[in-house]
Picture 1 (cartoon, rainbow, N blue to C red):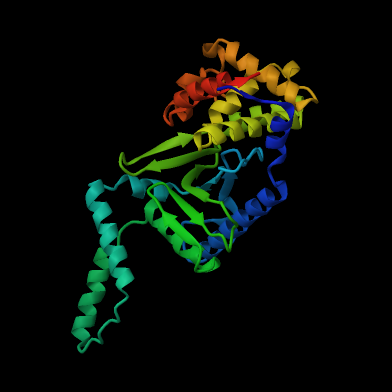
Picture 2: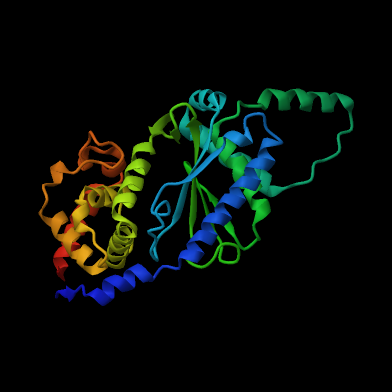
Length: 322
């Protein structure tokens, strides 16, 4: 059965977002992270507050959100020592088990018995010194989680994953909102994030400069209709597959569309852009992050099932009368 994508529906998808709410959540994230990092900077020599970098990296950057959107950010801390300490780690599963045991012991929260002899005290002090480990990015992430918990109510839940932190809380943040913060190291000189893969014990460089430059240029040449198109595509995809499509893919497709396809009429713009995407030679479309790569040679697309998203998008457009 084919549905009709009429003007009323397309304009409704554009207008369904409360931009003021989106802005308030964004401001809340910056406030929470800012206070957290200020506090940690007072307790750690590894953090220089004036060099901490927080940046939205999904559809939040453009404000092209829909009902299933999450608020995803990179939190970059420049520190070569943390990078070197993290790369020294061996035996992934053993370290994972040790972290679990440590967390379990903390959660037990048993009172310590008083020591009867000075000799016992000295022995414990020596043992504690020997058990100290070098400060790694996992330690940094855990410290951020612990500090963040001081700024939210007990009803808000903070999850600590291998490569990111998630925050969910209706009372503090709002309904149907999930915040993801990827804790990275940051290369100030080259403006590159370094995301750590615990299993492979390796940092991956992620460069967003070209992407943001291309998005800004497209917005300047096409205006708010470009952002509206990203939001409409996100909403349509989300409505049919209950997930947001890969944003690097969507942005690359829409940036590849000639500026002449964008007009003041949102529905006509949607018709123009959709027909172009369905008929264009896909191999000619460049990645928004790297103009030298086609979209299916871009790691930020192919490594997160972007090719599946593209096939689904084309099938989605074929379902509708355009």
